[in-house]
Image (cartoon, rainbow, N blue to C red; front, side, top):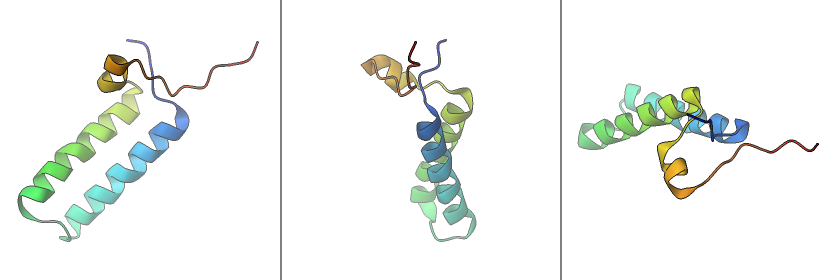
Length: 69
C-alpha cells in the first residue's frame, strides 16, 4: 500500500498516543473510557509507524508533502 501520512501527521499521532497511554498508566483515565482510549492509542501508534491510514485512503487524503522538481 502507498503511504499517505506525512512527518508532521506521524509526530502528532505519536504524541497523542503517548499522552493517552501515559494517562491510562497513571490511572488518570479508568474504566471503559481507558479501554476505548487505549484502543484509539494503539490504532494511532500502528498507523504512524506504518505510515498508512485506511480512513485517509477512503477519503482521498494525503498529508505527505510533494517534492518540487
